Amino acid sequence: MTALLSRPQPLPALRLGALLLAGLLLTACSDAGDPPPADPDPTISDEATAPTAEELASMRQARIRQARADRARATNAAAQQGDSAAGDNLRRYLATTEAGLLARGKLRTDRAPADAPFTADDLARNFVQIALRDEYGRDGQRLIADHHKAPLRRWQAPVAMQIAWGAASDIATQRRDRAEIAAFVSRLARVSGHDAGLVGDGGNFAVLILTEDERRDIGDHLSRIIPGIPPADIAALRDLDPGNFCTVFAYSRGAGSSYVNAVALIRAELPPRLRSSCIHEELAQGMGLANDSPGARPSIFNDDEEFALLTLHDELLLRILYDPRLRPGMSEAEATPIVRQIARELVQ
Image (cartoon, rainbow, N blue to C red; front, side):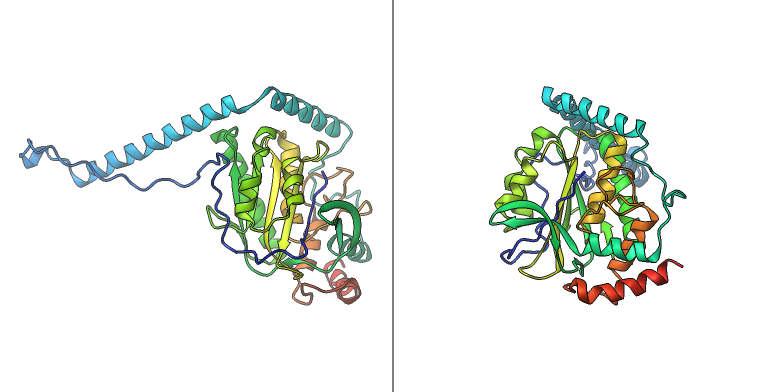
């Protein structure tokens, strides 16, 4: 699953706080406020028959629960009608793909596999290949795969991830996704030492979980949440290559190296293991580990699909990336001696 990380040159003054995840039939996750209590029946004057404060509170809660249930039924009904025949075919294809990878011993979930030891030198070399390279470059407005050298990029501001689904994702699916992503974002914050969390609105890192059909109408939405996003990036997200399960784009201002916005796209049709793998890889790459390397092992930043979930090796890459001895914009020549020192401290 190739991740796609891009830094436009330059973006016109990106505006923070613009992630208003509306349009696109996105599902709201916040509850409406309490409805006002009903006025007592004016024909009843006996104090003994008037509802108590506790009874009024209970009635309000009952109405809230009913409203939630109504919204859930509406969401689930839309989800049942949301799949096209093409979407059904894609689900079957992806399920078969996952089954084949698992049968070949791929998509492993072990965090520190005994059969894949690594040294401090391995870790430092892999960091340079993954954090100081770009998987894609630009030829005018076209994105091309070239794995060129790049400065160190990472977030300086807190990372506020905001999830949105299309109408085809039912309530149970949304709850599972939210729980998994929330736990993983907490892990990213812990291992990197950088402030990151899940928010309901006002995020700067959008996580879009959409079907093939829903993705076709993504253009206007992307332009709203990331003003100045290049047309080539919109096209790449809208027309996601069939061989890609998911992707991520991260953006800095102009020629800067500090990320201020990101958008990850995950196919809603993915089966469980591939879905989890996309969550781990794209969200971690969106933190600044932009490239993949065939020599990185054990790692999710390797297109051989051997590992599905973030490994100890990958956690250490994030530790290095956010070490205060490094700074955004450092070149490979500047960063490498420091990276080697940090790797020696982490791997004894």
